[in-house]
Amino acid sequence: MKVLIDTNVVLDVILEREPFVESATALFALIEDNEIQGYIAATTITNIFYVVRKRRSREVALQAISQLLRGLNLCDVGHQVIQQALSIDLKDFEDGVQLACAIAYDLAAIATRNTADFRGAEFVILSADELIAQFSADEP
Image (cartoon, rainbow, N blue to C red):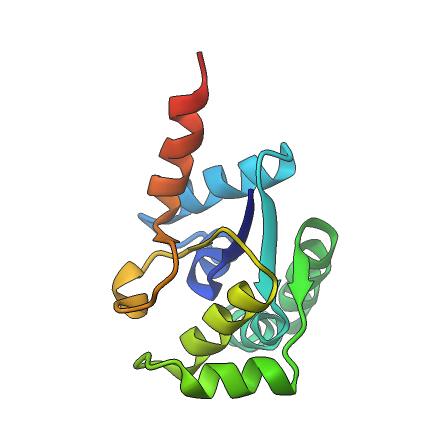
């Protein structure tokens, strides 16, 4: 299953944000175990760097980016993705870019902490817990 991981879930892991870090870490464990193929929009990298540098340090931000590049696939954000994001009627343009990436890369779902941010999207939007539950239900 190929899933786009929303920026907020990535930040939950890196910044160990309570009470969300447990679910986000469990989701990343599924990626490490090759149960899920994780994707992020290329623009997520710059957003992550900005937030982590401000909250922690430049060094921590660079280390986090290096780890993300080893464990996740990047969705390019080019002209077509931006055009599609402009036509998507979401409140937050960044969410529109992520949705456009998920569509362009034919991903199965978006994993986010804030499913309401994608309200009205004709796409599978799951919380980290909902996605994890799907894999737990499959176990004997």
